[in-house]
Length: 265
Image 1 (tube, rainbow, N blue to C red):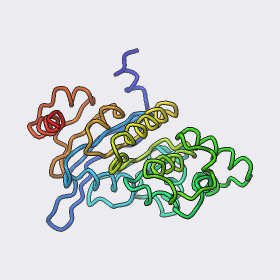
Image 2 (image 1 turned 180 degrees about the vertical axis):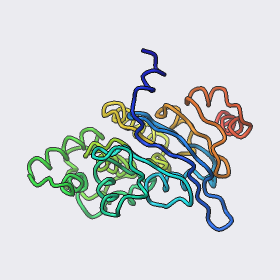
Image 3 (image 1 turned 60 degrees about the vertical axis):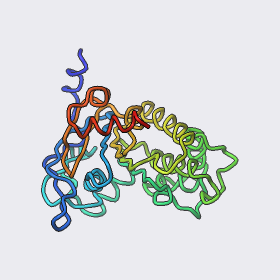
């Protein structure tokens, strides 16, 4: 079976149609549509102000679009427009089947709760109560993100930025979500720290078969992680396709400028 045929037989995980969001007279994102399949990683790139963060906020249910629909293939009810879900339903989805990795890890972890406690909170929020099993699972995930088990009871405020980001990833993935939203996951980190984080991320995404949407300005991040790429400019998707094809043979002048600016660095 060809790769195209395999995709055709899969159910859509996230179905986005005609999503637009404006702030007064300023366009955040405009008429964005795409489908995401289980296990697929989609990169969204563009300069600051291109609309990628606004789009991600809409997709993750943190911002209501002005028009359009965002349907997610829930385990219980199939494809459901997330905007029609009640607040408790959205919160449960965010705790179980979704993950959100923020650019600043301090927005995604509790700085005064131990590393193990941060990881254990998500399983506990959906009913886990056996302390030994919760702690063992925390240890498993600290190992996965390459944090020394001796730091299990340490507070994240004592961690480096890279360790905090890896802890945030463990906290999000411990419930094995099917979809993870990532907002500039390597932003603000040193190059060597970025490389380690990306290596961990790539391994976990492939190991767990996670679908992910990654918003970034860093083309090296999407080159390494994303199967497919969308390029945004002034709120619109101006180019999309397989990541290597878009980056190696960009058709739009704006995409060509993005790629050439990286090559010149």
